[in-house]
Length: 521
Image (cartoon, rainbow, N blue to C red; front, side):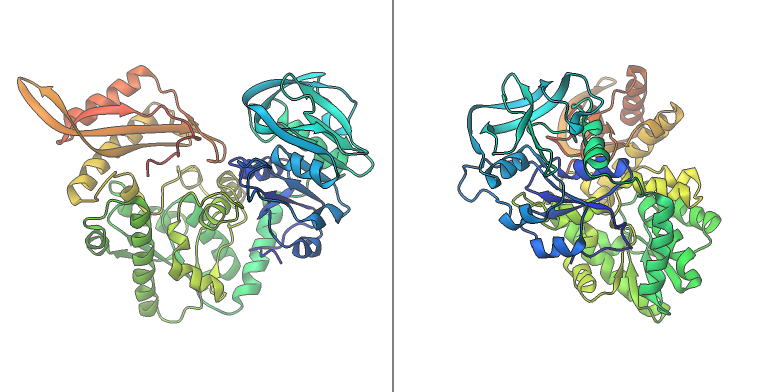
């Protein structure tokens, strides 16, 4: 059975993941429409899905060709569930082949914006115009729809761009409705949910709070919970939920790992004592972490070291506090998906500090409370507001668990930490003063182990480079680089170079996700 941190609405969508970079976007768009969606790998047991009684199944896109050796294939039994179904791109091919249609490898791939002509008055396209802009990303194509299916849209390069079996409530589209470049893609998903599946929008944060508190109380019983508090919105919201559920039986530990932002340890302690009145213990373990990180330049290794050392420090403090029965974490849905290979054949993008082996062992033993693991970041912010948390906590930009260690490219040293702390502080302060902080998903500085020649006064310098990274995003699954005013960038650059010894050059990152990541690791 699919495990959940809280009680999930009866009306839910199961998404079979074939490895698409857009799979999480499908879930996010559906949740924006107030219907719960969850992702499972394409090979997830059909019987387990059947027991969950989902309202519909969506088959995602994927990077494979159906004609590649070892290409992922949905279990034939998935098509016997007798519930609505939507296949997207690679998922379309799965539908076509399951019902005896025909696909083939296209002579050329299609990637980017395209126009489709809608041919039929289909419930999937209700409210759309006869010609719509969509986003295509495929190398195969449908050449013959299955018996009983009707072609409902076409494009210049895809004669069969969408199909339906209206009586069977089975649909397939060649394009990606979950991507923003599909102008009315959200409307397509809305139509599938409410016109085809006849669902109701019942997924909201108010209901989540109620079920989450109930679930925490049921799971914890009369036990004690220890929360690893970072000061970010995820752990903060987790703390408030736990406090509402079990009161002072939740203790929080804030560990200074030595790679926090400038004066962050002071700010976190003050902020949480003021707003949340938690049972909070502060631990300065910076020297310990930096010793472990000495000589390490691989970002994945940094993550693992910091994650494992955090657990060791955390457990030591737990023993000092006394009895505790559960570990609590502010783990989010993307953390779970990216850390564990739930993406079918796709690679794990990165490991997360809250998914190191020591934590996974506790999870398997049922000793970890993760009330947010069903949520995306923007849902957590919405939840925080519903809980009445102050804006300064709710609107805090994401900060990676391994901290500045993964924003220092190469070895982590005290000097590099000092430089990056100062640079990052300048960047954030200037952006806040310009009134742009809340318009950005993230804005931060990165230390590059690259030296360049510069001139200061009459002297030649040979010093390091700071990169500035600013992005806009809805859910961090995709992101665009943020356009910042020229005068702001100039001011930031001048301050960093003039005020921070060891830096003589500042660059601005203008890459988007994908193909880049938000962080530089």
